[in-house]
Length: 290
Image (cartoon, rainbow, N blue to C red; front, top):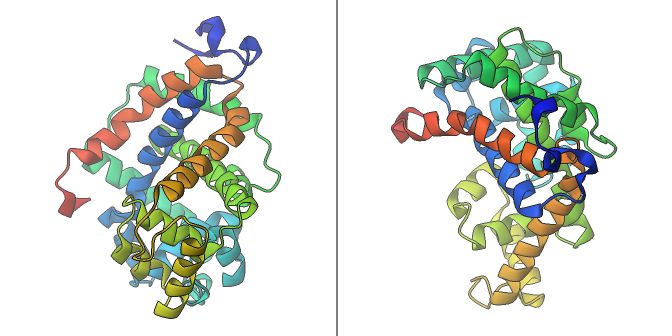
């Protein structure tokens, strides 16, 4: 099945997008992208470029699409990292230019996907591209810094890695949209992270270690959320906080409905199913190898 063969409900003139489908495809996109941050191949490729510290390597890999920007630009684009965490990337462009970091990221992606046995047939790859390509071609990139940067990266020759890069553009598009929602709701970089960890979806220890907000900053953000009634006095999320966190996700999905409109609800659901084998392959691998 290709784009022209999709039923009428998949086309942009079929009416508003189903927000449940938008949420489903967004989660599928995130899941298919996420492995790159944990795969040992990323650390190996970074070491080849002379960077063995995982934090700066992550920052370099993810921001390479923007070019040799100073760390302050990466801080602004990533939003929920502390300045001290992102400042550690100073010097990564001296180790290797962004183009080499991007090439190394693609190499790590292909190696990791083949190690765990990701397999999409040629037909499925072609169908997935027939869905995601018009989505990204018709996207509005205003204010979408990381998505726009990734959309400007030439696609690699490897068809599987090229699909992953298109998935990355979609993933960063939603992330950029989410930052707008956070700002509109008055949630600063540390505040949104504290709220996210309070939901249990992100381990606090991991968030603190990677984003590097200190105790005083974390406590101040917690106090602000308590004042809003989103956390109780013990830092536990309240019903109001859970509802607020859900509302943030719904507002983000509402932003993303326009992104997926070119292929409609059925097309978005089909794309989610086509890329599901990527995340499934990594889930099937013992966690210590991922």
